[in-house]
Image 1 (cartoon, rainbow, N blue to C red):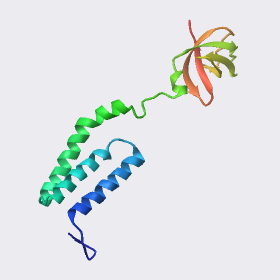
Image 2: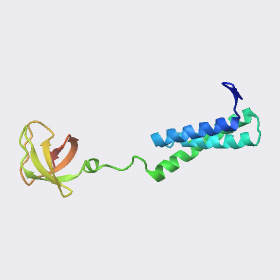
Image 3: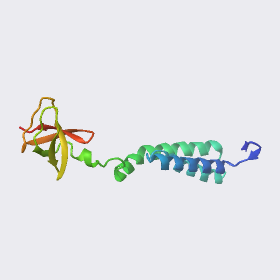
Image 4: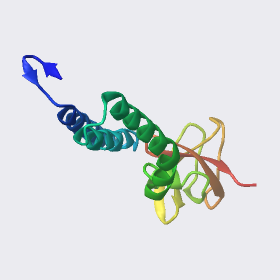
Length: 150
């Protein structure tokens, strides 16, 4: 192939494509472009073996799509990227005990999973007495939103 006055082999082009795709994968960590990088390496091997360009492109396309379709889900589940709950997400739905009463339009204190948090009632007119059990329904900034457990 002749580009900008230089003769560049398809093997070099496939190598550049593979490296670029690996860089994109490293920046995104989405387990998507990695399969296309593998397809580019397979096309690189085909180029080194002097296969026709249409065979190289076919191998790249078929290998990339098949790897993406059949292996991505398996690796995403095994690596569990983005599947871990944060500390705050983990307390949603948990039961807490009210340490200081929660009055309408004011902040009280609750204890959930051994940690003390500021808390407000779900409804603006809600009053929750000290010692009551509540359920965490949401998090607003650094405050838990709670409802009494009947």
